[in-house]
Length: 245
Image 1 (cartoon, helix red, strand yellow):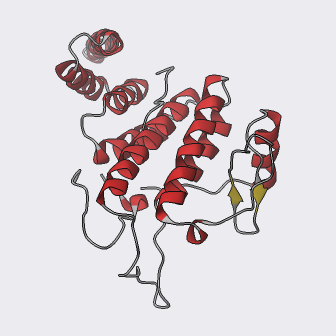
Image 2 (cartoon, helix red, strand yellow):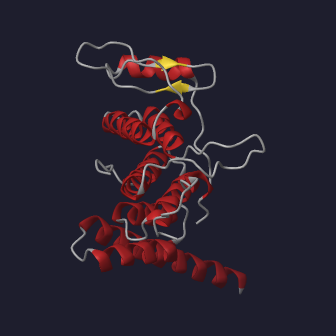
Image 3 (cartoon, helix red, strand yellow):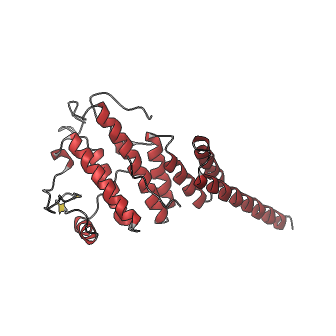
């Protein structure tokens, strides 16, 4: 469902079931944790944020004007608004990595942002705490929008890495939060086309064009899927003719 929960518990975004060259600058699988040393090295090489690694995981952080190192904190050590702010920083870092062609670097940043967004504390029986402060409805709405963007951007990265199945999965996750998200729909179509699923690609392109009739990328995707479908049918006819002798 795309409805924003308003109860007392923050949604666990990792449990959602349900080739673009741009990423979203605005706001399942559980995001994997990256190797701390590798991520720190990659961040430093880009002149981005100062970072600090913990034993459990790495933490992305942007330096202040004096480029001072930020003390590492895990999600549970931050308030809801601080986790949201940090996830937004992760998105920005990932976007900069994407724009210079560092796809895997961008994936690490986007996944870390999702790890902070989906944080839910558990009690001794491993049950979500009922008194968890999720930050209120407005913050939840913003976090849902940000999660949608991060999932969609991960889909774009996977397309760049030729991991089309993962690209499709991330696009679907984004669409579970917002079924009208144009870029996620477009990336879903691209992934289907790359996997040879022309009909599904056409459906995704059609949906984008319904929402935005002048979308040139979707129109090109539609044409590409139609051409691919035509070639597939011609190939089937040739094979059938050979079978008949």
